[in-house]
Image 1: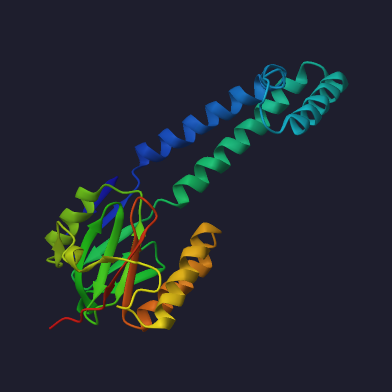
Image 2: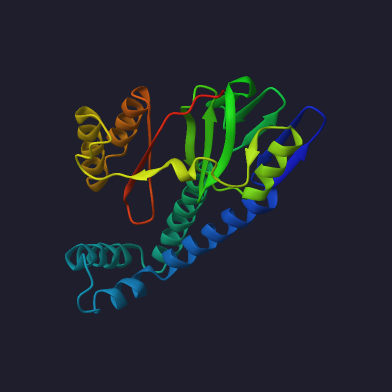
Length: 237
């Protein structure tokens, strides 16, 4: 990661060297796969139990037909296609890596999330998730980013943000037990719906339910075993 700082701000982003590495790696891989495509397909379709055998057979027939039309030039053409696909994939990967600008006034994440310092109660890492809790007690952010934790932590400390090395709310979280008496019926129903949405991999629905729960004063998260944990919102005193 690249860390350019001055008296006013700290910018954390992917360095030019890292960008070059990913573009070169994906480009070379794409060229190699394209050039040896026919051999790779011939090897793959002979593997017993390999999924998508019918699709591989169709692709193999297309490649063979194309080779019969233009001969040896086909390898160069497939290499070019592989190169373009490699550049595209590297670009998509780098787009997911954020640029974070930290100032004494706010935190700007990739120009679409802006967190004002005056609205922040605490910041910490929960496993791989960066968590920002507002003065109201609600979570303003819970997201995983492809950046070095130490780099961001140093930036936040340098600009005197309330960063905690451990989760200050860890002891307040409780594992959710369906229909628990500790929560109202409608909250239990939302947690059940969230559990179902996660099983169906419906990310948008999961986000919407989390917002509803937050409006009701409930913070929810998951552990590695996919179990849901909850706690009450704790406003800054």
